[in-house]
Amino acid sequence: MLINFTVKNWRSIKDEASITMQATREQQHGERLTKSNKFGFRILPNAIVFGPNASGKSNFVKAIEFLKDFVIFWDERFLNRNLTPNKLEIEQGDASSEFTIEMLLDGFIYEYYICCSSKEVREERLSKSNTSSEYMLFHRINQDFEFNESQISADDLYRLKVISQGTDRTRPLLNNAHEQKLDTFDTVYNWFKYSLQIIHPTSIFSRLSIFTSDEIVNLYNAWLPHLDTGIVRVEIEETTADKIGLSEENISEISDILFKAAPDKGVSASLGSKGDFGLIKIHPDGTTEIFRLITIHLNNNGDEVRFKMSEESDGTKRVLELIPAFCRDRGVSKTFIIDEIDRSLHSGLTKSLFQSFHSRCNEDNQDQIVATTHDLQLMTQSLFRRDEMWFFERGHRSSTLTSFADFIDTKKDKDIRKSYLDGRMGGLPNLRFDQIDLDACGG
Image (tube, rainbow, N blue to C red; front, side, top):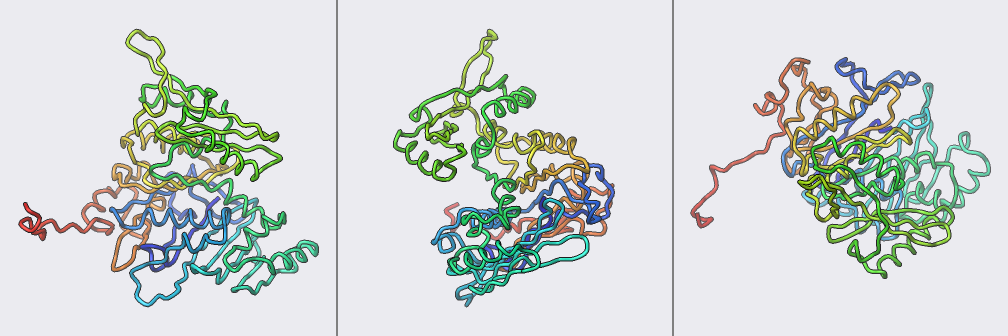
């Protein structure tokens, strides 16, 4: 589970911006918090981040996504293509961005830190904590690596020293160790790969590939008839590349990439274009199957009518994207980071999704949702604790992130939304329409 994330010098964020999922002493909605009896604290199941346009919300999500992709999908040009320090600082030179993430995994707290420029990893560190002590697993400064010999077996230590010597200056050791089939740090690597999930405003069915066909159908059919979409059920049908807007050449290229990623296990991935979306499955023998999702509605005679996804509304597509995050059966714990959760959704539906998620949270829950939003109808203590609500504010050349729990007058019965809109907390858009020269605009 996510405990903390901090980023510095990234896009609109100049100074450190941090979010913590460690609960305060607040008792409201305490029944849904995850308890870590071993460490003596409680973990929040969700956080909601408010703020005006261009305040830094999406950049914060992109920072988390950058870190995940850097660890999982590194290549030699990754930093040069993707690292984006704050551009409003003069004389930064070859500036570095810093990322720190803390997770509770298998009864231990892991902290991973990396500092990098567009040309190199300047520092990388992984530490592990139990109730009595914290110890470093490895620490890297440029191309100098230090390993904790008391915490790593002799065989793994020997391999790590060899692997580190061959680790490119632009590459995280966490990535290279896994790629070299060394599982010493795989608890952390696998959390990035399998548990940390990013959903963007325009994401379409990016979650489908983590489910089997039967799981998709069962999950959607349990929820969609009750969400006022007009859909009575969904089906998965086998299809061809052209039916989802792709060519056979596209499918062949995708199949080759996926098969190389997991030649012995088989793999699946979401794909599609032109408004229709599907699921490709590559079997261990290299054979390929393509499926697509079909929705079923009833006409005025009560007869079933089949719809392609391109015929569904943006709101329905967004619901289909979010259901696996909010409504899935518990299994491997996941942390979903959702940007602009309210995109194309009615406030009532967004609120109901959170209420459903909360109803299934308890002290043993391992799932989390961190979402950004513009929807102030969600800014209420009947739905969220104060320490679950945050807001971004754009300041002078930088964005800042603040918790509602930092305001001592936000008591349990206080109308937080009113205080926010009255400007008592900050985080409001700074609009100056009265200074617009309408004549210059041709008005």
